[in-house]
Amino acid sequence: MTPQLVIMSKLPRLGQVKTRLARDIGAVEALRFYKTASAALMRKLGRDPRWQTLLAVAPDSAVDEPGFFPPHLPLVAQGGGDLGARMGHLMRSLAPGPIVMIGGDIPDIESRHIAAAFKALGSHDAVFGPAEDGGYWLVGLKRFPRVPEIFGQVRWSSETTLNDTLANLKGARVALLEALPDIDTGADFYAWREKAKR
Image 1: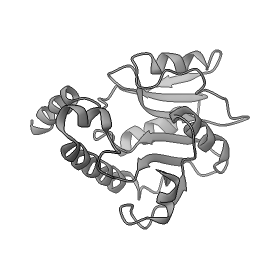
Image 2 (image 1 turned 45 degrees about the horizontal axis):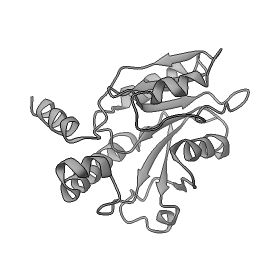
Image 3 (image 1 turned 180 degrees about the vertical axis):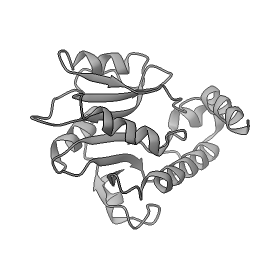
Image 4 (image 1 turned 120 degrees about the vertical axis):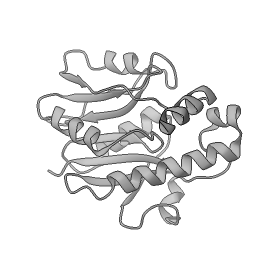
């Protein structure tokens, strides 16, 4: 059972990606950030032989518009519903084995984070990479002996997102990785840019 890394990625279209960030820094700059961060992440993680990388794309029609996405990475449709419904669908429908899922726009993710997540799933049922805003930049499930339903009743894009998800995992063995910044606001963006200059 090959470990699978799923990168959640949207087709980069003006006004349709990083909409909260765009309110603070403008749609063009938000699109530029998204394209740059996503391309770098796919480049960093997409050829690692320790796991198979898949791109879960939105809208679903993006599977037929692969121009932005690296040609060597398989594309799968995210499906409908909110973020939890889409992630839950992928967790249930992909080939057996452990899955680690990340957003396509978290610039500080490195291969070592993904390797640590898969290692954690050797002795845990689930793993999370907490975001500094109360959400998470990574979620992983062992998916054995079953796939738990963990995304219901989660308040997405809030300071309670991680805690809401953890509440669905009562009794499970859960590992936490280091916290990383999720770039959702202008303040996040400028803080991350300043840190990147150092």
